[in-house]
Image (tube, rainbow, N blue to C red; front, side, top):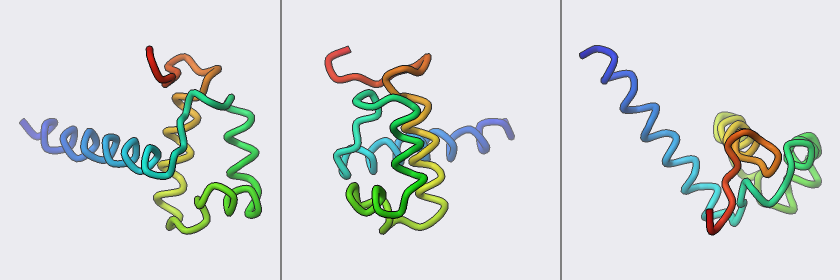
Length: 81
C-alpha cells in the first residue's frame, strides 16, 4: 500500500511535465537526444523555446522527459504513433 502513495505522485508529475511540454510546443520526438541536450546547454537556445522561464526543477524534469522520448530514444514520442 505504501508503494501506491509513492507511485501516484510520480505518475501525476509525469503527466504534468508532458502537459507542460505540449503547452510550450516542445514535441519530444521532433529532435534527437543530442539536439535536446544542446538546447538545454545554452541559455540563448533555452530563451528561443521559453525554457529559461522555468525553475530549475521544471527544467530538469522537462529535459529528462524530452531526452527519454527523443526521436532516437528507445521510447520516442512522435505524433501519429
